[in-house]
Amino acid sequence: DGGITQSPKYLFRKEGQNVTLSCEQNLNHDAMYWYRQDPGQGLRLIYYSQIVNDFQKGDIAEGYSVSREKKESFPLTVTSAQKNPTAFYLCASSPAGHGNQPQHFGDGTRLSIL
Amino acid sequence: SQQGEEDPQALSIQEGENATMNCSYKTSINNLQWYRQNSGRGLVHLILIRSNEREKHSGRLRVTLDTSKKSSSLLITASRAADTASYFCATDERENAGNMLTFGGGTRLMVKP
Image (cartoon, rainbow over all chains, first blue to last red):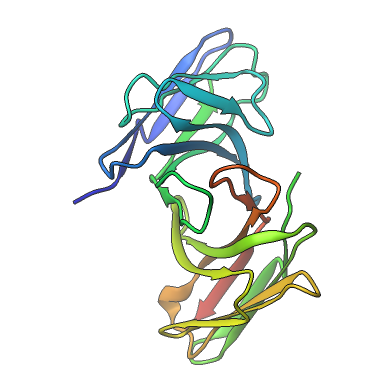
């Protein structure tokens, strides 16, 4: 079955530590996205990538970094510069193009501070 | 910043009743989408309505779009306990390149058996 896999499901970060969240898709989608969701809130865009080896900052990119070396993979690193990283992180993908395409989501990674 | 604002923020109904959720937005859009999120899970796409469409149906779901009022509504008919979830609207803004979406804050729906 095609889909998006996020791992791990739960992640704990120590002070000053960088952590990396994995996102893999086998839908052959060109575009991938990372969102942050705080309790009871909507989604805010962190980074997005329309094509391999290219990505752009979203609304809340500070303290995060990404790479897109393969079409299937779009890992997100939460750096020590992100002072409030506790949140639910969601990865999504969609076909490339100019809209009118739904996004497909993974089941998220919940990140907490130790 | 969030484009869409859902109303109400929370809704509690009995099984069998209809549930209506509203979404307002600020800028011109290519389309508006509705998503569902079960607790602790990812979002699932429900329905997409283009800016030149006024109404769309999918099973027990009915979505309307009024671009003059910059608003949309999602109606779930004959609700079931399994419909309990958060529902989000998302807009594909005309000024954005590509397929980026801007999400609202969501409506939390509880359907009591």
